[in-house]
Image 1 (spheres, rainbow, N blue to C red):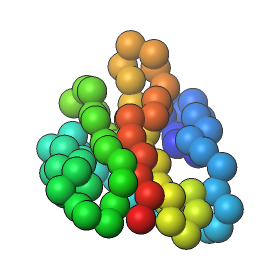
Image 2 (spheres, one colour):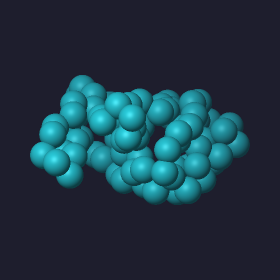
Image 3 (tube, rainbow, N blue to C red):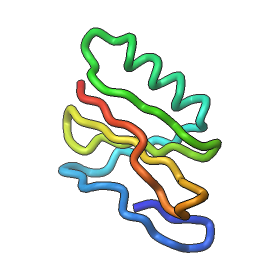
Length: 84
């Protein structure tokens, strides 16, 4: 779950383990996305769309997903995923 500044709660995803979440600026998420694209062992991408926080977390042992706050929608939307 993500908690917006106004108190709204957004469900991000279903986690099979304890949620392991990390927050990134757009620039940091773009760097992470570039690393994923260059990797020979990681499949996926991250494509931030706004200048807002990106939240990434492992859904299980090998799959992760990222969400970013959409100012237009007023909620978090999925902007990437990867598998290790």
